[in-house]
Length: 162
Image (cartoon, rainbow, N blue to C red; front, side, top):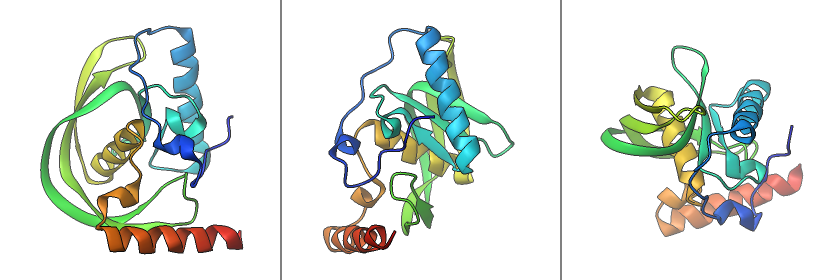
């Protein structure tokens, strides 16, 4: 299992390329992402967090199981819910963050089949969070500048203690 890239590593800001080949390497990547979600009990993980800059995410589904999507896009958002959010790339750090209460996510399975999911609750939050990673967006980027600076400073102090 590859190591999770942690902040302040600049690779977390890189944009990921679209998946254009639904082959064995993609299936292997999907398996690795599922393994990370299971092993860490995380809500999700994205390929760029392990140094693979392809548009692939894995998220825990509310009804169980881990969903892996290639080229995911949020096509619809409804409502806003503020809740605690963490990130494997910022271990041990959590912030209150507004996210859509419900999202519709479209993408492709690792076999290249187009799919659509209607997500609510933590499934919606995880999908939005992991899709952000594909564009180099970190969770605190959604905060106002002063709050963002405070959050980054708090995380860096926390990370120095560990």
